[in-house]
Image (cartoon, rainbow, N blue to C red; front, side):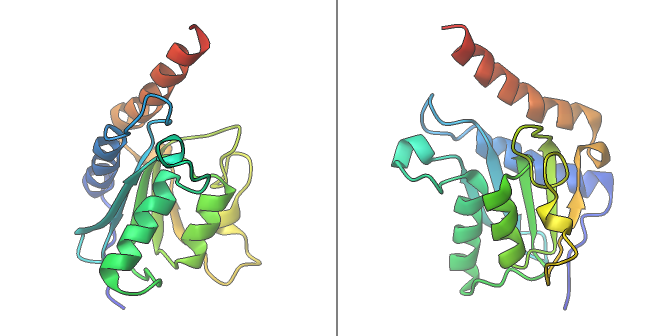
Length: 165
């Protein structure tokens, strides 16, 4: 199996920048601005998504799920072996589980989620030894500090406007 390994900081950051750009496409002011992209082993975007729960009324329309569905459609199969999922916010348990089930090779995320994160903050679904597939996890400390900070700032800005209305 040929796998693109976004191992350099430049490659990791490039993937996360794509996810950050996708977060800006959030359709409503009610949807949390999270973006995700799936890159094939050659580094091409084959799926992209942003949160659409409020826009669609679908509780599963998290950025990661939307991106994974698009990637599977484009690839023509549900197995996303060798692919990378980059997302601006640490996945929740649903999205972490979907990443495992889709067999993504690695997950890059830009901001930790201490309240619902399932890639090491609250839970660690992605590295649970009881599962038959464990994607490589590239956390914010392996991302350029400015980019990781930007991912967090987008979310902090969104929630600051909601708290002080």
